[in-house]
Length: 338
Ligand SMILES: [Zn+2]
Image (cartoon, rainbow, N blue to C red; front, side, top):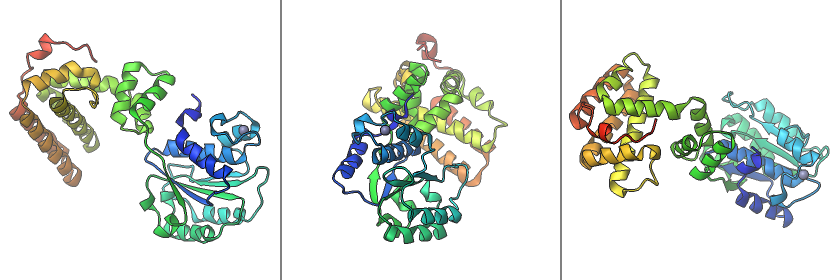
């Protein structure tokens, strides 16, 4: 898939409008929860600033050598820092290198673009060093800081930058990207709903085969909740936390359906018939009680970390509130998921 599909076209138009009107700011802060979307917007902005052929956003990337090299991260005037996302710091030495390059003219292009990916990883020392350059950067430079939200940086840094808020992906956009990348429609639809605007999360879940696992879990849960939970007796704390999150997500769907009667906001919309059966069988208040108590167990697990206790408590609770027997509806109403 072309990465152009990841670029927020509205924001790109706004940025290129500034280029046309020569109202460019020297420092930009791209804020948004989806780091990939922030990065793609930074690439498109660098292309708009340097492409020799076009400044029209809808024509970018135009396919010229400059656009292609910027996309590949090998253009000498577009410098990236913090590309190693495993590393939890952007080193002060990188900020020093940036400061020395700032004074130079562009090597080939029109504007030098410095992109700090995951700029929240700049230490206090590095932010202070950066700040000196942001006060009066030489012309012909654009500095772009990519962060999840503005408050992760010093106010003094933020106040010198123009913030561009990059919205998370819409459910539909994530679904379309996954389908374009070859995933099945039904699976893509579920993963997009589950990921809540985070493409990376949806892709990771796709890799892990989470759609199939969660459907097996659901089938097993409705047949026999005690046996379902028993299989995690030796699981790690992290894994129990995943199981609890799964139960909460499922109960949330039942609650949403009981209130709205619609599938639009459900995560497990692929199991709509099962959700309907749950909603028919269990009163709203029982499901809500179960939801709230499991939420408490999950918090206690996070704070005190006894996974076996958390699992036992969940089993007792589930048995008490919704019962342990296989409900008759799973025999009557197979919903074909899974
Ligand atoms: Zn181009």
